[in-house]
Structure formats: structure tokens, C-alpha cells
Image 1 (cartoon, rainbow, N blue to C red):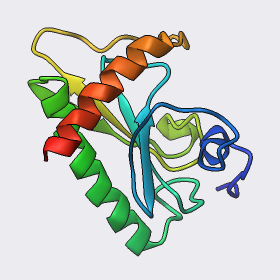
Image 2: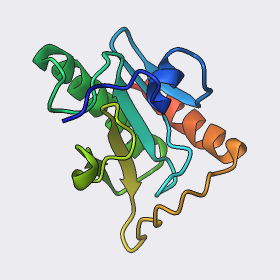
Image 3: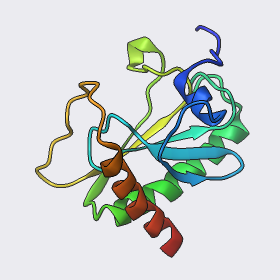
Length: 142
């Protein structure tokens, strides 16, 4: 396994060097809209701890990440009026990981609506902002 690269895109987001549409943040985690969403309301949750993937994060930081994933997942489901959720996490290239900072995908799902393919096409900023607002509203409502 390779070492953590502090210049990965998510590390740059955490340092404020790259923008993101934030949905939730606490002392240990950050959740933001995926700029290449496979579903409307696709959110990523990352630890602030520099961890390449699930194999090298300290257990206590993984537990904090899981708590945030659950909190954000509830808000995504409610805010996007989703019928269900797909939650994904990939490890290493062979496992499908593309950005080498641990991250969890939260994808709202609706019956008979397939996920979009990962084409690399970025969603319009105003669309991401509108979806983020719905999710933030759901978080505020509890």
C-alpha cells in the first residue's frame, strides 16, 4: 500500500485550497457535494484525519466518520425525499478508489431510477448548491 499523499484533492479541500459545496462539518469530519454526482444529492463524507483509506485510519477516527456518515445519510434521505440510500466506500485502485483520501459516498436512491455512470462530467454549481441546501435544511430540522 502506498503512503498518504497530502496533495490529493480532498486534502486540498480540507486546507481551503479548493472549493466545495459544504453540507456538514464538525471537528473530525467534512461532508460536501460530489461534483460528479451519480445521483441527485450525492454527498461525500471524509475524515479530517489524513488517511489514505479504511486500512490505515485509527479506529477512533473511523468511528467518528461512521457517526457523521449516519447523520448525513439521514439528512440526505430526508432532504432529497429519497426512497433509499446506497453507501459506498472503496479501497485502493483495484477496489475502485480514485481519490486516495478515505471517503464515503452517500447516494440517494429512488425505485426504477438507475445511478448515472461515472463519466467525469461535472454538475452545474447551482444544481449542487440547491441539493446541498435541501440536505442542510434536513440536518437543521434533525
